[in-house]
Image (cartoon, rainbow, N blue to C red; front, side):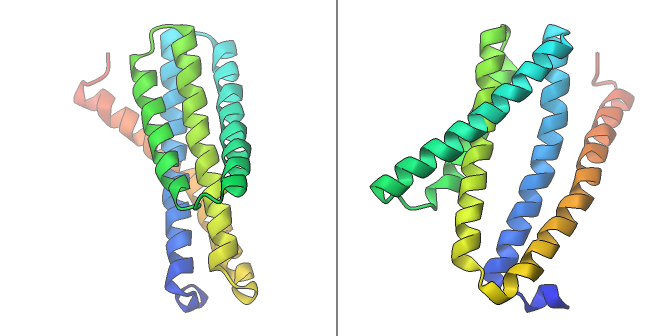
Length: 168
């Protein structure tokens, strides 16, 4: 198949991207439900989503500009992505007030920004012109499937928790 014909680093990028998309789909469902359960406000959910995208843009543009100016290696982006997302989820789990939840969602968005900057940098470095079409095709096809599977898995987990008696 054409997928197997891709060089190992390019296949690794595809797998990494698919894993990231799946995890963010599941985290997205749970964070939105959690924020709604905490504050019972659809308006605040909308605000936290906007803050998440704000964090994404700040980290994507800010880190990109700083890394370019100072010559910082892009390999630290994945580490920062994991760190910001993890800290954001932990902050959200302990958030009892609106500023704490807003900061947590901004951190989660910041993690996404670091990921996007780093994955795009590696795409340009690792892929060759002749393989970018195949790479993009598999990336898009997998993302479409994951956009359906991720929320379905989150729903199944919620249902399983309810059946097991773990929900309130």
